[in-house]
Length: 226
Image (cartoon, rainbow, N blue to C red; front, side):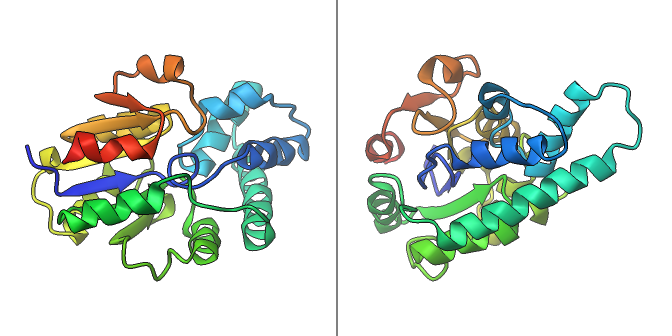
């Protein structure tokens, strides 16, 4: 098995997340009268954000039919605040060694791609602030609203494979910090699924989902891939 493509998650895996996503999630729920604790939000990190909101709304309002309006309102509130945050916040930065690892992989003729549970409208300010929108060390980026279903479905990985002419999933590695990152890689049939402890889940939580490897730093990734 030779890895030809590594698909990285963004927030918590390659880009700093200091709890701001969780904060804005809970604030959006609070604005419609639903009090959600931080642990509940962490559970749904990595999902397409509208799907994550739907999961929590269904939990708090079981049996309520036609809750699309509530879900839409929460999602619009969350999106608006996240875009404003990423356009203006201080301290947005790559996680340690992310860009070094991207370059090392490319120097070894391995494609580097990003995928995310964010929509494109949230992702673009992140990429622009980091200079990743024009960076040569990223070959492709795909967002959850650009495929039929988000994680844990494999569509984002499959579209990246098609775009980058990767024929076999066994030649793809998936790297992420959440349950659904791991499940996405497994559902896509990736040859390697790597979890990182730099985001929403602890090592003990990640172990439950049986990734091939768990690492505490991206610096350790090339030794697994190459």
